[in-house]
Image 1 (cartoon, rainbow, N blue to C red):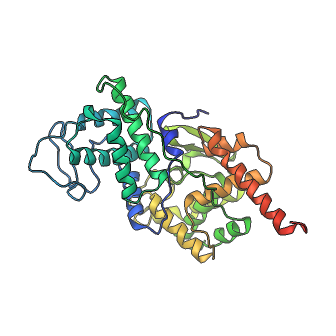
Image 2 (image 1 turned 120 degrees about the vertical axis):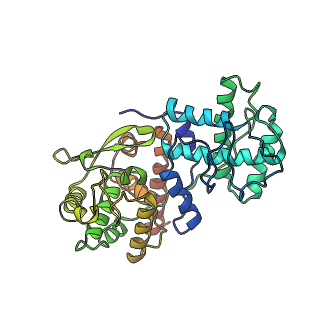
Image 3 (image 1 turned 60 degrees about the horizontal axis):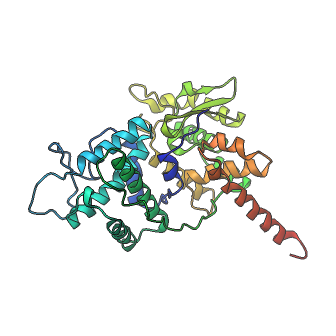
Length: 367
């Protein structure tokens, strides 16, 4: 198994999962899911137009247009950087799309301030980060933007496009590390009982929930699974994670039975005309999206009476926490989750310590 390093890992450490109830964040997630990394740099919601060579297209909602229609000279540099992280670094399409969105906001700032990339100073970077705080972004989101800028300017410096890196001496915002939310075993059982196995959609949803809890996959990995990724006799599934890196994850018998029941009795009814190569289909016969699954999970969580706002990552955290509680070693959990750095996995040891404290205070007579 190969463990990913570099640009993607930095961003994983500062990523924030938006709550599914927020329609705006769902739209952004869906855009990232469907966006292809090799497309020409363009702003979200921009109308489909072909930009002139070297011209950066920007949404009128994001930028006040000036009287000049001259091409933005930063576009070639940004497109070169995005091609670099996609092709040479091998970052996933969603990660590249996230870089694109962050850097477009920076380009908007440059246009408003009438500055070019070669003229940027540390004071300009600090001023830009200040505008992010003024917009209401938290420290974690600002840190993610700074990671995007650091990697852009390091690339430009390496390519000889700028004389120095203006982000070199800028400290990242201090981020208080919050413990991940997870479900109890009883809450997981209640959640898995919600889908109706009498319908094709119910069979699909039961398989999705069982598989997510059994493997701890990321939701983007889950919805891109194909039937040939399973080795039923061996009880494993092949998962393609960040940067197209593959890993094998053990799958329990309960989850395998749910997947087989869906394939045998439910999937064909959802396939409609044609046959998608993906395992989990929506009502139109296409691949189920991340946002579509997010909504399903939220509804099932409400029906199960679970107070914790449910996201796919809550089930991923539950998978890791329950394994650690039952004696699994941290290295094995790291490999199953696909973490490139074990320090990311170590957060679950803090979860376990907090759980032990809670048990002590609840049950010890002298607590």
